[in-house]
Image 1 (tube, rainbow, N blue to C red):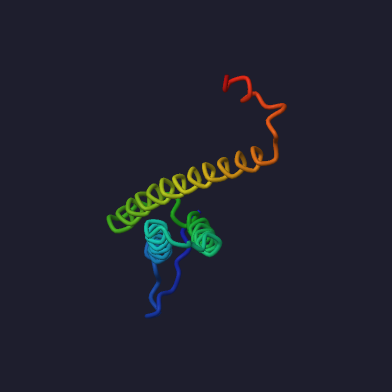
Image 2 (image 1 turned 90 degrees about the vertical axis):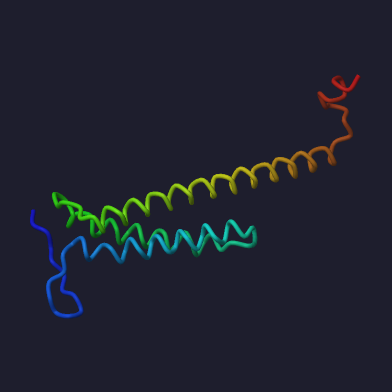
Length: 129
């Protein structure tokens, strides 16, 4: 299977590696923005970031077949390395957010359950003695 060459703005053929670099850069920018938003601990539009990341993944998947069997140049290898680092940071931050949301949910669930019970059928009655 041969690689499909795209035409650059100057009319010259563009290599598959050069065509995918802007996609990687946009995805990395999206990850940086989401990571910064999470780090600020304010409201985060997770739906918008999810949409942008999904679009980036779709674009990467569309370009991937064109890269099969090609040598990664230093620029592409570096861009992919930086993207991997940003993805790991994003995964770690989102995991922390999810754990915190679960903890808050557990606290609220427990408070609602305790407020609706008079303790008659609770195991806690026997443990408190």
